[in-house]
Length: 122
Image (cartoon, rainbow, N blue to C red; front, side, top):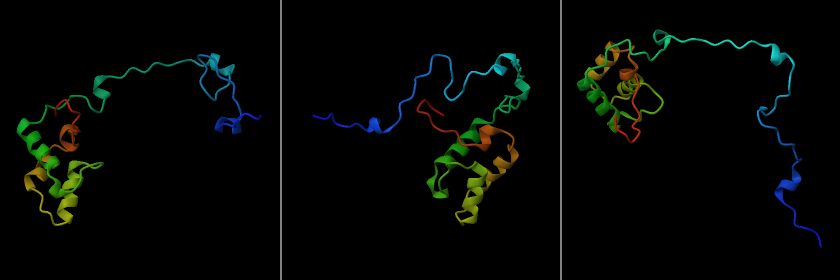
């Protein structure tokens, strides 16, 4: 009597790779000659470095309320200013102080981008 066929029978078998060898790469003699260079990054070079003072908590609260207000449309994948401008184009009359604050703090990612709630708080 014949054994039942399995889905894995239709695929070719591959040898398992040993530990330390990345998949899809063969051992190359040139790899031994390459020199690894370590890059040091300064805190000033980091785009999210705390070079600016944190924004006013009242401003962040106002922006949070704007984020949570569904009357201005979804806020996924766009900046707050893009959402404000889209709402304006659609005739939804978003609050003017929001736009002023976003333009004033344009370089601050805490103001420009919406914070995602992670269950731990804002």
